Length: 281
Image (cartoon, rainbow, N blue to C red; front, side, top):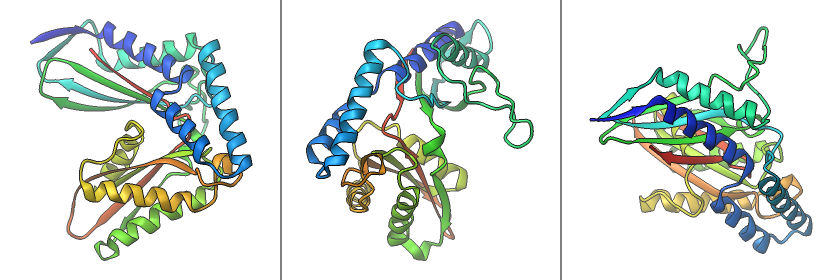
């Protein structure tokens, strides 16, 4: 048994959220540069150049990459041999988010209820936490700041098994096409397949956190990722929605066993900022 004080969790969460809002991931940076090399549209290349310049300024001056600094989402793998001390686990996470958004001068984008008063909580809490108990004596924390523009363009649908692979392909491509310029392309497209409506939605969100260039280890799904990326980039939406071939930098597919009567599919669209980071305590 290993003791971990929740103070470490608070500090880790705080540092991660400030970092991901100031500095784009190295994998995304590589993807944007590759897009600049392959984009055929002059306007598209100009947009990518501006995105790269913006990211450089944000990192150098330690200011937010985007004015929409996102909703705080946290995936935690908690080792079953960890004994937490020093206070409430969930409060430690929320305090870390609170401090990051207040001290980091990041926009607060959470309202206390979704329909009626819609009053801003003024500190970007509460965070959304997904907890998984795993073997070991460590805590793996992965965070993402999800902006409203791309989240609003995401979608979920339960297909019939008879619709099969082609039905999945059509739904994913149609979702991106309907989104058009709204989610700030070039995109990372996360796709969750199987499970239930909540499971496939969670898989699609988690898929957006995968490092650029990594593929599903199952060769069938890896090929599906490549095919979908090719189909999406043939839509002509392009960087910023101004036309071109680089509409998406990656399509990441995750799957889970499903009921014999259903084929749930979720598409979670992530903008080019793709803010995510991880740490192990």
